Length: 151
Image (cartoon, rainbow, N blue to C red):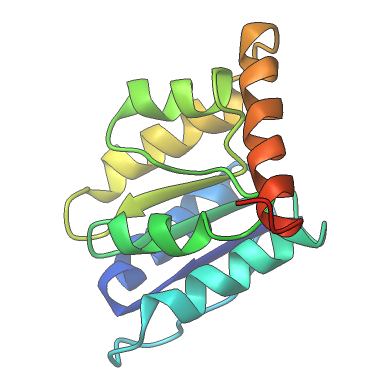
């Protein structure tokens, strides 16, 4: 399953991304927000990140004003690799090197065309594995140390 969420600062871009995904025949579940009323980004980052952590979704997109707050909140969840992407290069690297399962974008800094191109690159990229897998395993070890109270 593919999920998406935004705060009020990312609402317009979220709607554009949903339309782009529909053009690619990708079904997406929208976890909010549904209007432009001011909301707190951690609430929406948590919805998407929790679903990834619990295996209820494989991929997600988060959008707030800059993408920074959503990135910080989402990366608190075990197993989440939320990457703030700013261009097509960071979108590709987030998948090829980091196997990001969530991408995060800034609704106030990207146009719908820029964001759609970045989503396309991320979707089409493939995780390279190899030395990058070893690094992801080290991140998992850190998460386990935290769970076990060793950190």
